[in-house]
Length: 200
Image (cartoon, rainbow, N blue to C red; front, side, top):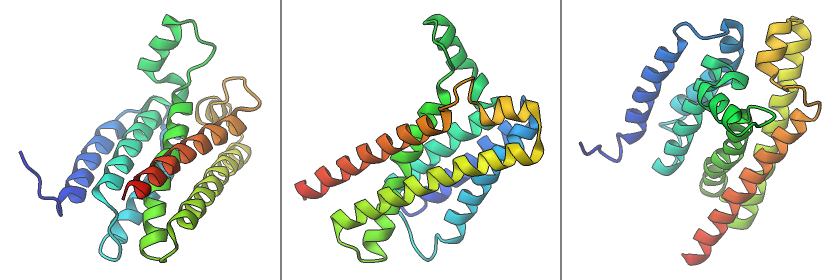
């Protein structure tokens, strides 16, 4: 089935909403699901409400879709108990379930690209500076998210939420490592953008 290029983002939204509804049914930790889905709802509404004012590339919408699906999976099971990665962890005798690291890396990689598109096309910033601003914006957003996570934990004072939402898995440097892998993802995406622009 061939999907019209102009209707592709709406198709992705429709598929994501079905996945989101299915994964909202009986999550492993309802409180974790609730807090993890606050940014999901905000991001989804943002892209829906701004669609008529600024359209990102279908490539960006595809990356955002993949990220949101993976994040929604994390909210259903909690990032520390993703079944597939728990299997990999046990198989290779790994010290932690690193599904959260993968998603943090993808956060950096995925959102630099639409940020770059907006800054270069809408704000008319030159390509290198547009990439640099996108990199800084996503790094700042990533750090804000980690701070918000900590505030939620402190305000709720819930041990279950601490273990399954914050998900440090005993690593006191977990937030810093999350931000670092996200930054590496942003750098990699930026490198791809720079190479692509040079070839043009």
